[in-house]
Image (cartoon, rainbow over all chains, first blue to last red; front, top):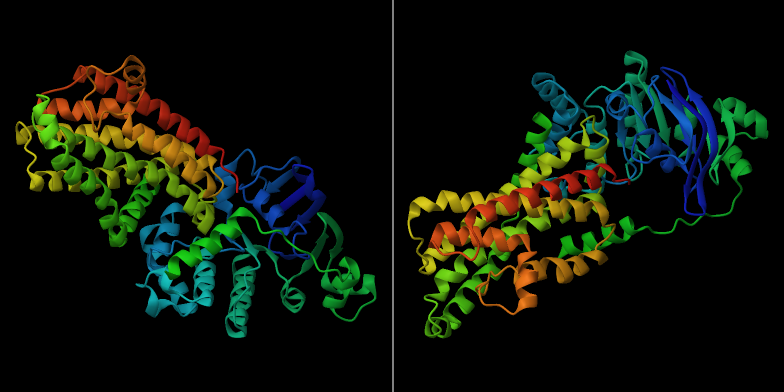
Length: 262
Length: 248
């Protein structure tokens, strides 16, 4: 379903993704793990047509996301790592907006929006502007929105960041459910190794832009001779803490936060 | 089509919901209109040019439309920084449609702002030669809005952060305003200034509004329309091209 060959992305002299190749089969849940700045999000951005790779090839459901952008975009849904809601619109309007852009028919859009908002316990607040929501509520809304158009492939970039255990549990149950019932292929990243261990069929570990290990959680644990995935992960990627430099976007976001509080 | 519509609707909703911004953006035109209109009035009259309030009103309307439409385009920067741009860009909709919807929304808001300022002008004592010419003036407002919404999108797609914003404001938007003849007549100017003002697309928009509202203009109104259409088309194409190249 997803096929990546020798993918490279350079930003100037910095190589964010370095010769990465992997496959994800249809109906598989694939967890892409790695420390901060390892190249996870950059890979997702290239797969989802937001960035052009420096070199290498990609395929989504047989389509090239570089050349057949719109066809490819119809196939996937994505929950981004950082916020992507319109704070001036209400929760319901954010869902509507998404549904219209993804050509979900009117009736199905309303039914699914209602079901998803209820599922993520946002139904009572559907008429409120999103900027009034707490961090966790915003996160839940982003996830609900990602499920709205029933994609063939679902990209989840650190979806559980900032969620309480209840919402996290709820999220993974839904992910498993759509994966089993609708054969949706899931490509996820997370920093919670226990989640990856529990949910993913297969795992790829990326560090400094290079894929350092690939296989089932069991195989990776066996390969490193460790008991838990967390230990295996540390054995593969080391214990040094990585710093991600704050980009212009992060600085702006802080600025915007200050602005909103005034 | 539905994508264009929902993007247009979003711009309008955001406009209606930010009442503070709506009021704030009327403050500056009111200052120009009331302070300059009444302050420079006597001098202008003595120079034999008639009422300055009558003269400056179309200029102030043009200014409002200019600012509002450029800022709607630059608002892309906010969408980028606050993340919503990603949501639009991964959707299975051609980028051209996204750009068109957003630009039309921004232009609509700009025209509404222009009409509000026109209302204030009327309250302050401005009188067009005939109220039947108001729809024609609106046509010029739409043209100005589209020209500068195109410019705004082109800029907004190219800027990465807010630092560039002040630069654009001081070295592009304000000069466009001051050199447009919004505040002074475009006749009998020193040679250099005469040439520069002729390169300013806003000059033709405001001149066109003066032609229909007051029956007095520096250029031929047909020239005004032609210049606006040509420059508008070019800027919208450039804006669409820049927008299609955005990477996040």
